[in-house]
Length: 180
Image (cartoon, rainbow, N blue to C red; front, side, top):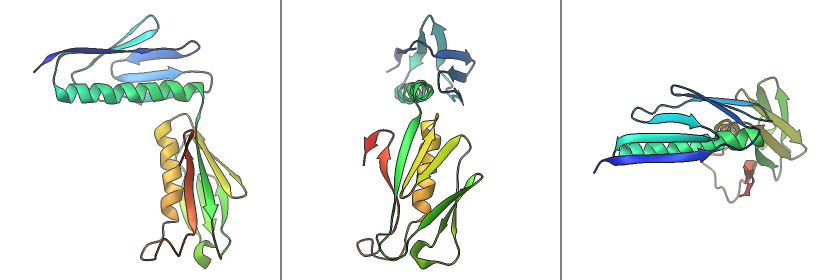
């Protein structure tokens, strides 16, 4: 059954939002976040301090798309107010692991006693800080911060070995403010 749907998002103070077709730009105290939204049957409007997303004749597909886009916009607004922060912990039992940052790449040395260091690509727009055994990843974009954390975790994944015995690696301990 097709019906008219709309959702509104409140824009907080000190946050500027500009809509140009399907391109959305959010500016705030921390910086600027841009995104091109791929929504075919959705109409975006900005009135006063609200973003209105409408669909004339919407089906389940448009409703799902609308809810997804609303979540993305809320994350963009939250990101320019305060950056998203992921924390990872370097765990080792026998061979001490060391992590270094070189330009847009992190180098993990001595993982499981390996002679060749493992390399992790850091996405553009992500800031990585290392404090002994805690790695902190911050970004305006929640998806980039999450991808950066996932890159570290997958670089030290051990395959074909029992995880209960070989517990070495880099693991996410805090995901955007939530303990894991």
